[in-house]
Image (cartoon, rainbow over all chains, first blue to last red; front, side, top):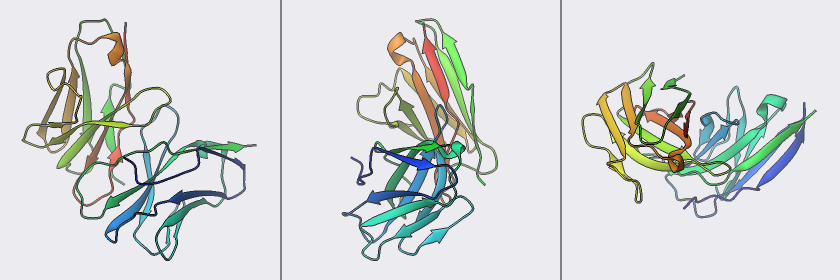
Length: 111
Length: 114
């Protein structure tokens, strides 16, 4: 079973920041938080991951709370092409296993 | 970044025939590849784990004789759907890892069995 809880859907205005929350209250010390997204009829796309520090790359920022029980993915300037299902997944950093996908958040960016 | 190529992107076949889907890691060697299946409006479900040079490990409920997986090299894994039936129609997605990078995914194969 997925170890995360995400809202089913969210809307965001084009050009505004999209903040996608994720709860992972049972995360263990060696588990990372990964974010992927899936645009309709495509394979999942890796976005970002982190352990406890905030992370930023060219796609997004990941803010992890100090107790690591929740995190927020931030798309700073959402575009229509960011409309997708966003998945928050926790996994042991040393694991070579698969990712377990929950239902994710359907983000709709509107003009 | 790591690129995983999947082919074909879509295929239509007749019931009873077999279909082969290829998954290649283009710029890294994939020690492990995973095959997922996704039905409409549902999330990805893992079918099997494929390790180079060894037999695949199948998830509960996935028939290994129906979904044949071959991982003969560090850059190629294949999934063959044998004797396909309409209920096998789905979106099949592979992913690959080289042991260091996050898991990267192919763009999926839409299989329609008529």
